[in-house]
Image (cartoon, rainbow, N blue to C red; front, side, top):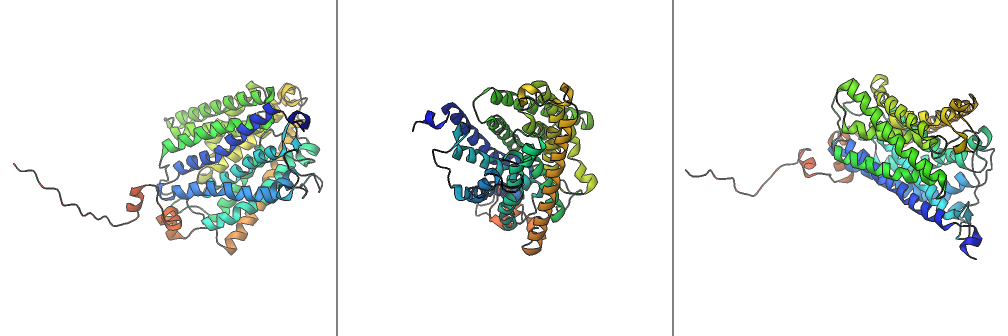
Length: 433
């Protein structure tokens, strides 16, 4: 049977292959972004938390995750079936739209991977690596998989019954990672020295490199969600670029007015905030809407990251302030800026659609955030009481790189932890007159 007879479009398939690789690249990019933001003593641990998520989530997704998320609905829009356990039935002749189903499944896998990895930023510097290895597969099955089914799966209640829109992952990616980060912050508690010691990023060039890789990969994340090389993908691509730019500018504007200094960390964070907000809405709004959504996220998130000091939760790398808040902004503003030419009929408040769509978006946000927070808090408590989720005080003080992985990112990291300095070289001689 020829590819054309199977219904596979080679152009769409080629684009989705590239988009899948771009989204997978986002997780190493995130590792660099997070790794640069922590102190030298835990940078390798931060990288490892992202990289091990690639392996663990892949195994879980291939075994059962894809089937439960995208299999035919079995329980009133809540979860998919078991027909594709172990990727059963997804041979080369299986088609999803105009692309091979196995490619669609792999594309969706990359979303699940980075969502779990995002959570690690909230508990940086103080989580047991072994506990993280247990948390990742359980969270993927209990939280990500159901929410992905609700949002995108056949018969999922958010899309098919409620009618809320989410083009590329505001609900299953951004809001779940942010709400889960908040839950784990409360379970594990703050870092030693929180609100007392300076905990500045140790390598801002690494942060900027990570942000650049994230931005690059985000084009696959958002434009790839059109599942074809078409006009919708092109519009989502441009909206993604535009929102990232206005998010960056909005954050820098706030920094300049508030602190008197626009910073590189602010530029990276602002771009990410704009990209987070446009993720659910890139396929629903016009270019004007994308610009406003990105700017709103850049401004609001720049203030939201300081809430942890007011409310005393230690969100180490601002997962709550950027991903939860940015995801809520982008998901809700679909109800304001949605245009019919992008959605195929749904219009937002600004374009005469009334309050109905905004109400649907709000219900979806509250439901997903509440479910995610509750399940994650319970899972975190269970792991904490059985295995212990928090690293020991000495491990945290010395650094997880050395105590857990027996490595350091930099030579001076070893010296900084009290290692003796010895040298067999002779002492320098004074120059003769």
